[in-house]
Length: 326
Image 1 (spheres, rainbow, N blue to C red):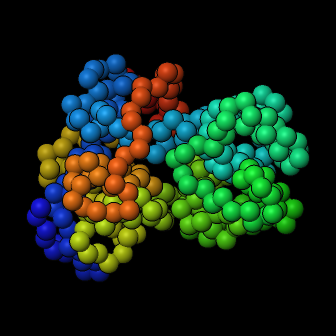
Image 2 (cartoon, rainbow, N blue to C red):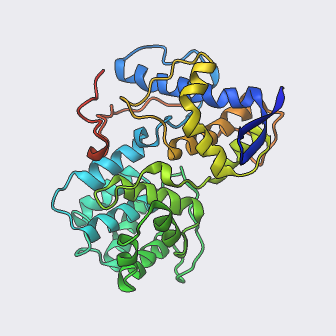
């Protein structure tokens, strides 16, 4: 495995594992190729045995199934939602992180808004859903499960958190955030919300009409991204700078490596996407380069074709929906 020291900028130096860094760019291009092959009904989706066998997220976070549900169903389907409704819906959905739970919950109580947010009513509804379905949380993110508010069930504590946000007017503070980083800083101070979840929630909120920050203004590396960065680089100065370097140099790197990267109808990879790609690189390396040790040694989830086809829809402010074509 080749290692070399590369001067990225006058303020950033890092010692990279060349083969692993090239794998990062390969995964970005090949996973996006899979995305378009699915849309066009082209088989096989990929000849890469690792990407065929295991589940990997899309190169663009907004294209993932849960993000698509959030954007379409939680945020944009109903045009009569107030700011406080959107805020509540986005935070609650990301805490649950499971499309099926959201649909079951709205089937029981109706469209979730601030007016019909009654903690005890939602506790009863989620208890029924839990008994019927067994699992009510998605497994993409590890959510803090402590009993901060004194309740036994995780969802009881999460509902208590949402109640606190509105009772103590934290919602107004969130809505007045002047930047993506400020939004992140406010969210991460909340109980049960760590740095990674605060960043994910900030990005979710920024999909909505509530905010319109540039996703490249700020990035926070999650645990998986940190593992991926440590596999790509033997030494480095700053995780945020590494991610932003990938954003700034993507076209040059794809060209240098001879990779045909198909962007998202003209939208380049943003910081949230590159952050996620480092996480996917960590996963891929567990199989491809097992000698690179971390606290995760295998990929848990195998790839299974989705039963329902996604009709892709992105935040209208991105200007992509009119460009979507097969």
